[in-house]
Structures are given as structure tokens and as C-alpha cells.
Image (spheres, rainbow, N blue to C red):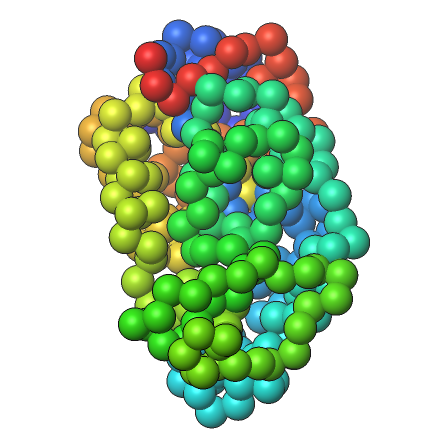
Length: 256
């Protein structure tokens, strides 16, 4: 099907599609939180994070083992940024859909701040709000104070270094969360894709999976990225502007 790109016609089509769908989930990326003021990794803007840093030098096991102080300093800078931002209109309107599962690539907690129950959010790439032990045999985990994150330190349980509880390049997604996300996407009537480039795999593969199992796909994003070409309906623009009229008055659920 040729994607709708005109927002007036597309918005009406998308609302009708959502209204008749029995099972709907949202799949979000960095563009959702960018409207709150968090820099994205892959935006061409010169302020984007990856435009100033080589990701393999800051978000990989090799980087951490080679220079753990630099990696922790960078993540603590990101944590300090997160401490100063709040959910935007898109987060809030998604949170109003209290029966809908939120699958997200974002490592922030802005969906939860907006009111989404933690059990309703599947964080595919982990959480920047926690540190974990770098020793895979140790399951130590602790909450981080975003306003005053701790510097590099050792695990109090086994003595290995603590690291952010995020998925780095070359690492597997959290098995339980990934399984639940795949299972859900195989059962949907409609997947609402918000603010993702759909270039980071395996997470982006959920869009293809949903389509393979018969789901329709609605994409909301200001950039004509890869996700657009998998869309039945593409709504070009900021999520904070499009989602409120798109979702107003609807009561969407991921489970019947």
C-alpha cells in the first residue's frame, strides 16, 4: 500500500484504523524524547551525540574496558541532561492510553514520568537510570541519582566495575524483554511507530515482524526515515503535534 503522507487525510485514516484495531502497541525511538530536549544519537544536527563522539569509543564493552572513566563520565553527562528534562505532549498522550504497551528503544524514563506503569514499558535497550555489575556472573543492580550520579566505582558484591544498565553495541537485547516484544508484535492489529529511524537492529525488526503477522503500521516522524517505507500510513511531523489529535478520545489496548 502506498503510504499516506498528507497529514490531514492521513490523520483521519490513522484514527479510523486505530479505532477498529483490537490490539495496538507503540514502538518509539529517540525522536520521541528529542522533543523534551534530549539530544539524539543519529540526528544530522551538529548537536546530536554521535556527531561529537564515536559510539564505539563510548558505548561498547571494548570502550569500557579500555577507558572506563571516560565512558562513565559521558554517561553521567547524559544522566545530568535527563535530570533536567520533563515528558512532552507526546509522552503524555501515550501515557493516557493506559492499556497500551509501550515498546521503546529509549533508555530514559520519560514515559514512566508521564504516567505509564513500569510494567507497560518494554525497554529494549535497557535503562540509563541504573548501574549494573560488569561481571556477567553477578546480578548486582542499583538505582542512579540523575542529579548527582556517582563516578566510576566497584561493585560492592564482587569487586568488578559498575557500568550503565544499557545495551551496548555488540551486546544482545535483554532476552525476556525481547521475547515479550516479539510475541506482542506477532499478535497486533496495528503498530504505532513514533520517532525512530528504524535503522538500529534487531529492535527495528519488530516493524517487519508485525507486518509479517498481518499488522498495519502507522509511522509518526518528522524525517522520512526507513520506517516510512514500512508504513501503511505515514504522518510527517513532530510526535508532540501529531499524537494528541491522533489519539484523542481513543481507548487503545494491547491485550483484548
